[in-house]
Amino acid sequence: MVLVDDIIAAIEAARDKVMADEIKALVKLGLPRNMARQTVATRFHIKVDEEEGGGADFENRQWQDIN
Image (cartoon, rainbow, N blue to C red; front, side, top):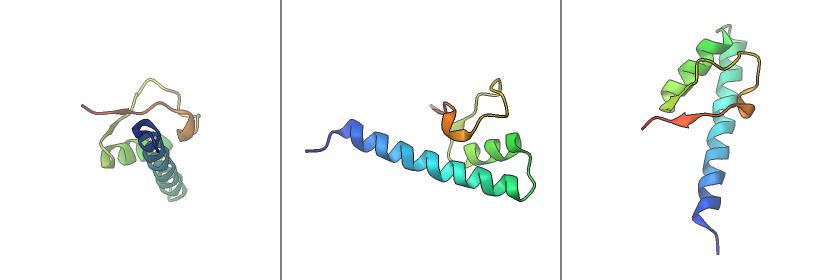
């Protein structure tokens, strides 16, 4: 039997991986990292905390769903 929390965690991990890959691709195309992060967050309806530093990787950040 699989717990619902495990399923949700797996879905969130997959979403974070896809978002990180998209950010890397946009940065590779020449977009500034903050703009790429904001663009991807908007697409996934995620709120970005603007106070966080720009140097950390996406996987280490806390993203909160917009309510």
